Length: 409
Figure 1 (cartoon, rainbow, N blue to C red):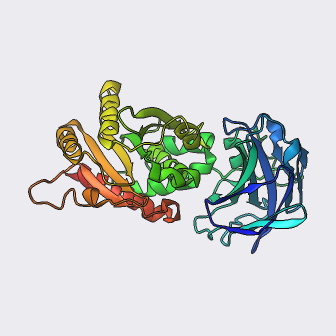
Figure 2: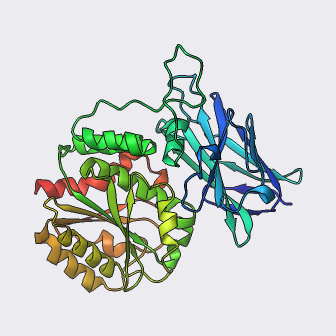
Figure 3: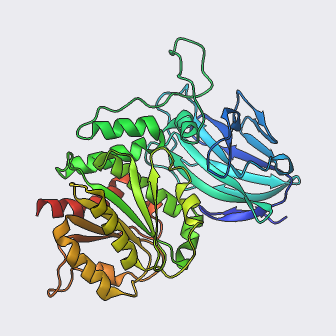
């Protein structure tokens, strides 16, 4: 079998046979574990966390830095499993800076390898790879997604009931402790809810809160919406978790602006945009679960925008609406989009168009370039082809600069 060097988001096929995944961590002591997940993206029971105190479960075993998965023995109820590296909880303050290396082997021979980009945001746990079922077989995808919550926080997000850690004077516990709630200014209730329901989002939520405070809108409330392009050219970005990661960051921002912990999500997919929601208590893998219910077709952003406006008006909200609209290409109905922007200006609706993907985005970039048409309730942020590579501080600045300026006007 030929060895494949994977980049973040890429995948390769596997034999339905034992696969050995070896993690090499540089610069700090770390633990390796695996989570077995059902089709809902959550564990079936606490036993589906495989780690040093529970080293085997349903064909999956952990021994030091090595995870072995006998794919033929994995029960049908397990849709995928993830491989995780977490900083040793006995090293207070330890975080990942250099990303772990992952080597994958089958039939005694190397199959693939993956080196994720290095980390800069205080990550204490890294999801390195995902093994998942596809067309009756198995594939492995390179993930490389870091979180600041530690293994306990990550496990809780996937549905594992983690018992509280005893005091440090007692014997070491099987899982590291969650981070304590930060001393917050402004949106304490929202941050407290993030820590309780989605500790994996606590670090970006704190960064978002800081960005709002830096722009003197720390106490602002807004109804946050998310529109996602579901055109066929976005398929790779959905499969590589780029859209999921983007939605998580928007959710973290919403927790400080709108502390109900819920963001309505609208997929732009023709004349019948699909509306659902992503919440602090279900966000793990949520975009992947939802978008598979939507056909790939040329997106109609105007229809999706109308759906968001209708939902906002029907909700009876008195706070302004902050509608984050991800766009991957030019709209085919430009006049209709312009009309919607003009008509919603008096309604307390602010539109942020976030561009990422491989399409042309000149229409959105130039919305306010013309002297004959100026939209006071619109901003554009180019998040590059991979928004996950943009540091939190710069990402949230791009997300809220236009919104803050609109509020001041």
